[in-house]
Amino acid sequence: MNEALEKIRQEALARLQEVREEKELEELNSSVLGRSGSLTGILRTMGQLDKEQRAKLGQASNAVKKELEQAMAERRAKIAQLMQQKAFEKETLDVTEPGIRRQPSGRLHPMTQTYREIRDALIGMGFTTFHGPEVEYDDFNFTKLNLPKDHPARDMQDTFYVNDKVVLRTHTSPCEARALMTVKPPFRLVIPGRVFRVDEVDASHSPVFMQMEGLVVDKNISFADLKGTLDEFVHTVFGPDVKTRMRPSYFPFTEPSAEVDISCTICGGKGCRVCKGTGWLEILGCGVTNPHELENCGLDPHEWSAFAFGIGVDRVTSLKYGINDIRLEYENDARFLGQF
Image (cartoon, rainbow, N blue to C red; front, top):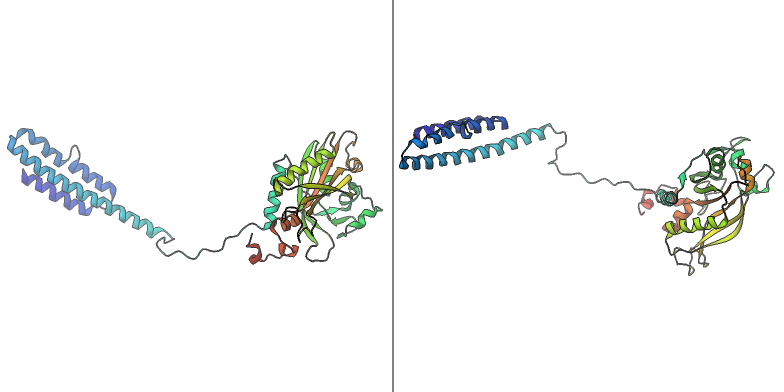
């Protein structure tokens, strides 16, 4: 019987050296140690032996079984290692090689961060984004906004003319006219975009700048609705402790009109170099939409009313990040922009 066990042991170990795949290993395990395996078959004959022979056979069989199980476990680990090596050889990327130095990653431009913050604040208040063309008809840029050709307020804006009827828009307000003519009221719109004016480039002026405009159209809108909306907007963007005030102003497309100031975000309203000692910073213009504009765009001012406000994204960016020269926001200097 010991000879039979030794034969099973030697044959199993010899076959084990030739095994190269997991499937072959399982077949060998089944043929030797499985329920119908050769070693199991010997163990079934133990009932025919006397007590002393059974003890010897059991001891010898267990020794062979443990040896084969250990050898198969080692072979299984070796097969797994070989399979992993083959997988690595097929890979185009050698993960064992030292890593290269991490390349600098990009980040959002501070104006983009400010734009998204303003946009998201207004969207959170129920506004929807509305876009219009940068190359605009004179009619939408001026006439429909209560600025006919002989209106003196046209001189307030230096305009790039493409031809007699087409301009580069000087504000985002032409989108107001387009919305009033195409969107069914009531509605709340936030209108972002680039605008263009003939300006010398300096620390506070640029011929191209980013503007965002809000327009709300509904019935029985009052100046109180405008103020409540702007207070909520300012507190969302600049913080709950920031104060607001309104000063009378003039815009041809709103009546009444106002400029909105906020308490200085640098000194908290105490007075500093940024706010020129006043404790206040001007951030936007606003007003109740002029009834003539509503009429020009096909709405009955006796039924509908509206208010609008416009804010310069680059100015808010300068205030939020303490940038004292608007040119820095447009020069794409990675050393400067990398600070934000």
